Image 1: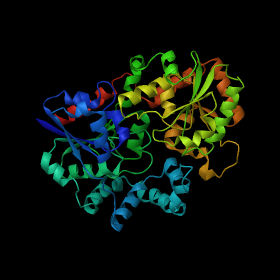
Image 2: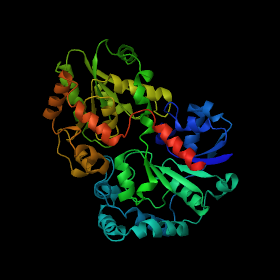
Image 3: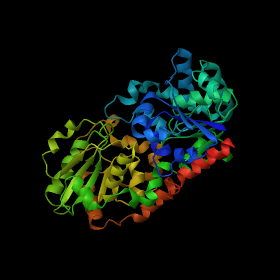
Image 4: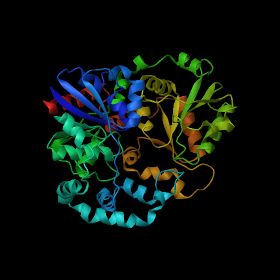
Length: 456
């Protein structure tokens, strides 16, 4: 029997590993010659036991809870700082100078050291030898506590699969595997992780979700091309047969207490990044109340789970304002709810987020908010900062995304999409082709097949 250690430190990795039909964990657990050691944080343990209790009864899946270890000593923190800035992309620069959250000081209050960060990338960062050889060697010398030694002594795995390799806990586990010369396979949990900072420890092979991540893994993270495979996004697997996971529009409208036959504009809230969100909501409700988009139209706000709904208090008495705190997408019911919202929306309004990809997959007109509302605000709080992020530039530089630069622009684009939802369909198709690889329901299969190939 072969033993695989599979890491699962963050909730956003659930959509990659647990949720799709015939998910990665489903496919692996069917092989009775495998023992799967799920290495999770304590918060993930609770989520697994509540939301996936049936799966946890599988005899060849063993749950191990580990602590999250971060650089602590002066030497550890200094080395971590040094190697992180061996790359300095447009994303890194934005984070180092302005940050991306509207509710936090620019760059965490440390803008003044951005020059040092850029200097590290322009000098030491030019050397592939430093990135490929020196940094991993020093990592093993400096981070010597080996917090996962007992776990590896206990199971002696044949393969380690790191589902969120850019996350420091996965780096510690990867380091232990390297010390023992155990084969490793890695993946980033999202599409924006490989262009932010340099990642010290490399897995033997890497699974990229799309061509952009493939190129970043080679150009920025110095993987050899032949060690990188493109697999697609497992979290998008259900979209290939979305009708299996959605209700009729009438059923959904009834559930959210909207009138039969209504249209709705789905507004993906992102308050921590978009300071002008209330201005945008007021304008949208004004136009809807005036009948600009038809007599039976709603504004439907999708918030993040756990968000304080009191900030939407001024809008709640408006009969055309729909709000609902959605269930977490880390379980099937939450996933279905999100699919229904996306599938039945007539137009989607969003800031720069993964929704740009998902709206294109659903072939839904989407307008991105690329202006700061009614008031002039400092650039450190402006939504325009997000346009400098490398993963967003992949979309907007090619003109695949409709960006509203003013309230007039927002009104115009909503109006034209209401009248003809098929407009810009070709751009949405090109966006999916460029950024999603394949929407064929088989990303989970490709990932599990590479895992099985690596362990045999």
